[in-house]
Image (cartoon, rainbow, N blue to C red; front, side, top):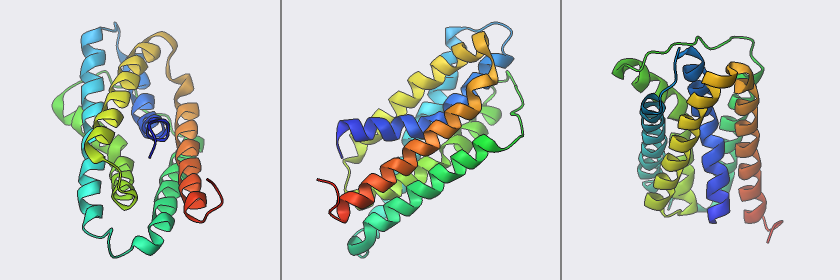
Length: 187
């Protein structure tokens, strides 16, 4: 997997965390870079941890399903992306809560990184070098989440749905690219 492909996946995975970070920033009466860093560390940390755990799980099975692993990667990325797009069109608005307590942040970080667990399984099938990949994903998510807090504090939640839609579309397109490469349609 190229660095460009990994970057695109990292951005796609981070869109849920970015959207929540934007709403966190909206709820903060006064934004501080310390709080933005805390949000970034939670979301970036879990976005890095979950693909690693998924990779460990997927590594146990990658040899036995090698002949159809590209279909699994496609289906997982399409399901994750489709779910993100579906959430973007749902009418419910996220509650803006400025709390940064451990319980709240851990629950939100886990909730926004579940899709990264499935991507980690996909990485095992594709034999991605996992440590650089998870560090990259975690770093991108950290940066986007910290920026999301600032953006939310300035602009509000108006871009949340667009970010979720874009992230979902990116993951679906990456899954399709993986499938087409394995089927010989792309170089």
